[in-house]
Image 1 (tube, one colour):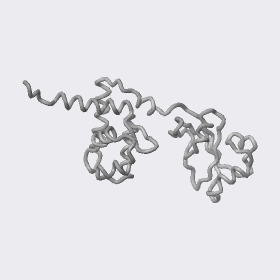
Image 2: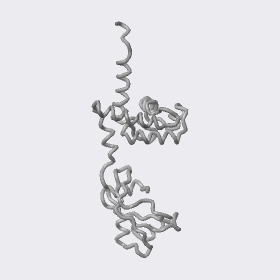
Image 3: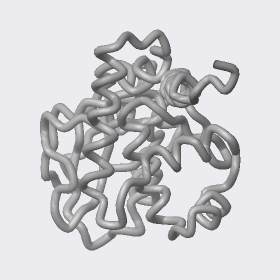
Image 4: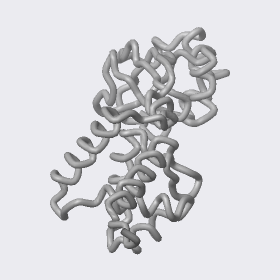
Length: 204
């Protein structure tokens, strides 16, 4: 379920508490949580209704000045079932707080490494997480297509992989490309430090 940014901002400040959609079958359920640009949006109610059941209060709660504005918005899905969806802000996106945590202790570092190793193990093409994190570290704000080309990857597949790293709080999306979060930078710095520590002292 997608929202325009202006609607997300109104959900965030509490002025928009309803949404209407036409679907051939319900796309969300009561109790669902949606991650959005402004935080977590909670879906409290999902009701199948008719056009005649839409009230003036419903229109105001959904941000419409008139029924015509609502029908115009829904015109692309005129043959779907009309749904009235009650929603509210449920809090910030936990990934935002997670990616700012750069003071990793040994246990947290080991957990991140375990998660990355699990992703690599499940990949049919072999390990990729370290290479992609290092490349984003070296080339922040670089278009996904260019990153994919450098790695010999398909662009859409690379974007899916970046989302897996984002789930761990290691990357952030930019208008163009990505960058490592503070947490991601700490992880990559840790790799570099361990690699340096492993290099034999040639002066010994």
